[in-house]
Amino acid sequence: MQYNMVLFDLDGTITDSGEGIIHSVIYALEKMNLNVPAQSELYSFIGPPLNDTFKQLYQLGETETEQAVSYYREYYQAKGMYENHIYEGIPALLTSLKQAECALYIATSKPEIYAKQILTHFKLDHYFTGIYGASLDGVRSKKGDVIHYALKSANITDLHETVMIGDRSHDIIGAKENKLASIGVLYGFGDQTELEQAGADFIARTPKNIEDIIVKR
Picture 1 (cartoon, rainbow, N blue to C red):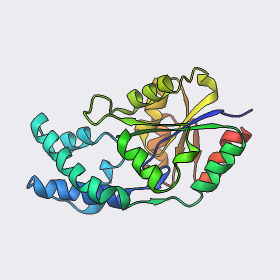
Picture 2: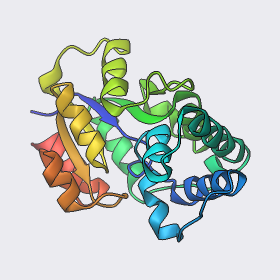
Picture 3: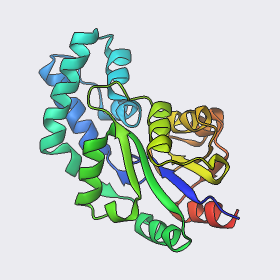
Picture 4: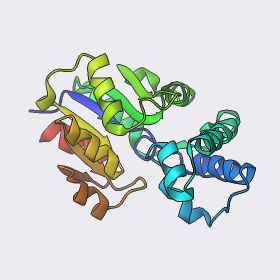
């Protein structure tokens, strides 16, 4: 018995994107003449929809938020998306899951166009049957909406045989909203308390743990 359809978050699950995201946020804040805190305080930008985080942390209105996101993308497109690396053990995990005849998908709050470019850059795109993400206009940005879009686009109907994997609470909550099981990973940017409080069905410390849960459950 195994999960046959596997949805992966990207940032903090497949790749360690912290450096590029933080540099992009700092660039945007400086362009907006906003206070730039210590880098350790900017990790909240990794994972959730960018618009929401700018609004919540800096109390920005719609116009200011759009401008901040525009500046962020200015740096991210040029440099930030490549200030990134694959977590150790991920290629082996993806290979094992494909050998176990799992269909693999990406469901990320990152704009879909960037997700595809990043996975192509790291030569991981061939593992995935579909790569789904947020829309650039922000209409589809919340994780639950992205997961719904992925399930619909991929025509996945066997929800009990589908699992969502991510490192932050919104990955777990988004999975629940779509009636999916979830695996929270501890090697990304979340922690065990966050993932357990969100209701993760399983916790994985390493990519190898993910394989054990999916293939051998």
